[in-house]
Length: 212
Image (cartoon, rainbow, N blue to C red):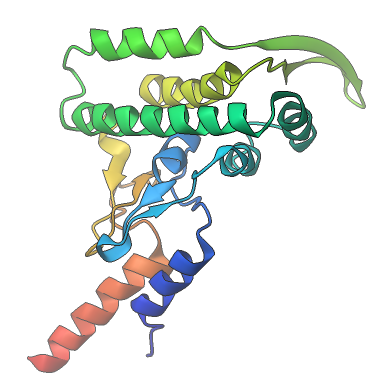
């Protein structure tokens, strides 16, 4: 059996500089917008345009709404939102690392910060007609960059209130910094991706058996 070299996969990721959606949850995918395969830092939310594209790709913002907001706010405001988003990301990473290790600890300060971010939310509800009848949908009405941060805060709130801390994991792959939410039945998932880090581990194990 042959395996694609992991270094080739990593090199492709570095060249592409595109966000990864391997986490199984938007909050985890947001953490993974910064990663460091084999110690080489990759930042995929470098400016406001990157941030908007990530929100759309993650399904947190409709493309039409993103275009409208981009025209209204301008590049400087979007870049400022991206800068704050990166700070929120690293704060969240620190908190989730501690939450995973000690889910029953007191996180009053972190919850207070999260609630302040959630208070920026600007969504509203609208009744629409569908083939199945009337239903209520949630719309975004983002006036400024605060609305983008609120979208991230929503995903973090959903993660810490709806998921078990033990299911939030970091990839066991050598040199990998990616996180994921383990939704497998036995909670035995080890790697961010079977095609990358999982494959890499198999190659290493095969070579070790051959060496022995």
